[in-house]
Length: 233
Image (cartoon, rainbow, N blue to C red):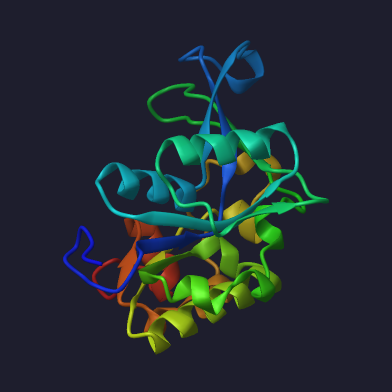
């Protein structure tokens, strides 16, 4: 089989791992989140969005994560299928709810964001969800920073990385740094994209050597490197 990138022998170009949520965007632009009265629903979480984006570009993508056994989990399943994303790695968690993110655009400098991710489905990902045969079907895997914040999803991602490297494939890291998902900011500070943390930096620095490509904003590069200035990072 010859794929869109010219490779052979792989059914998939990329598997993305990690966050999959329903995003609810406030429709009253310029309003505080407290004042928003209606929301539009969409797929959220960078791994889910990367899977959709690469599928739209003609690649054969798959998402490996968990969603809840409820209406929002089914919405994600159906929408990802409509976008052409392979769902062989999408697990339905019988106990946990699909994650939510609620957002608004208050001004050109304020974008309130509330995460509803306490014990959510995608953070229950574990090593047993990583099937070596499934990983072997792809040329690359994308792992994400948030899923290194807790032990079980971290172990799952490290297993996927090891398998992919063993297969001769590529590993991509999306740093995906959200301070309050590492317990560094309050519930109402979801829009805070950078808080320096030696503990987070040390964790991420153990991941970097196993990656072929690293994606991040300037702030995310700082947290992953542990540097305080961009040039040394």
